[in-house]
Image 1: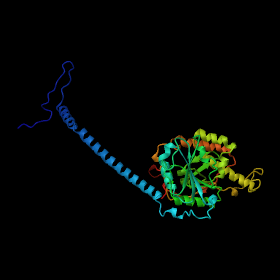
Image 2: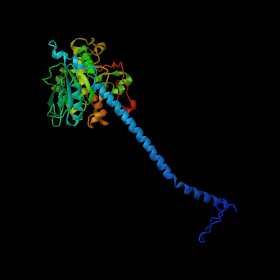
Image 3: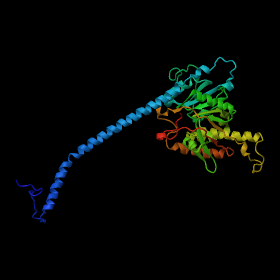
Image 4: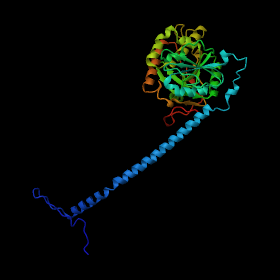
Length: 387
């Protein structure tokens, strides 16, 4: 039997119009092997497609598993807040005739509107059973006002009042309210959940500080010299220092509301309306400026202070903010797609607020305080997690 030689029997065609040299045996073998290899390659795309689809299925299953695990963790974290144990409601002592409403109770103020009703319902249901609360005031800025008992559940203990505003302005958060009878006001966002016991700790700390400072759960860092900067929570816990609070959760005295709405601060409120941002920054400058005025009026200016009698003793300037580390804190803003803190322009607007308010309040001093216990921040791109 004759041994077959690859490429030997392959016909070679010559173009008489364009003659070419004869192909050698080595070249013909190469052409034959290449043609055979290309024929085998026709099955490879199917194999690659199969492997690609299998990889997608594995990745999809992994994503679904991780997503389900994250959802379960969030659900457990949420349950640990709303089903707080032991129930603090038993310690309310509503029949105690020795309770001083002005000093021993506080009012929660929550600003909201129709697009945030989903989160507001959960917030009211939770805070509606916390102790030491005299009243929950919903500052309603826009849309059909909610009906207590229909749109919003009626809390079993705490009273809820809806204050309807004629203008959609975030300045309304600090509008003086003659029906608020407590000295302490807790400003809370309509998408933030915290333990009732953490609120109690914050309220006690606020009273211990004398009621002149802001006590809260969301520390921030403001610098005015040499340049104006507003720094967020991750920077605060990265550096270990803070000097301000935001209204996502903070206690303050209602006396500052009158100053906020004074005629002389109309330009500042107009800037807040223009940017639809920065009302909490403005309040921080107000508190810092009032502290300066108290020090001057009490004679603790430290002599000439090196500036012709108008300086302040550095030891007399105290921090205007006190951070109380919460054991739990959950942002449920993912239940809605709206909010002023979304988007890239948010931080730029706040930087501008700091710059402008620094000019309006040249005497406001922001003294840093030290964070004693830090949460877990930046995990998988998330915010700060309190455990």
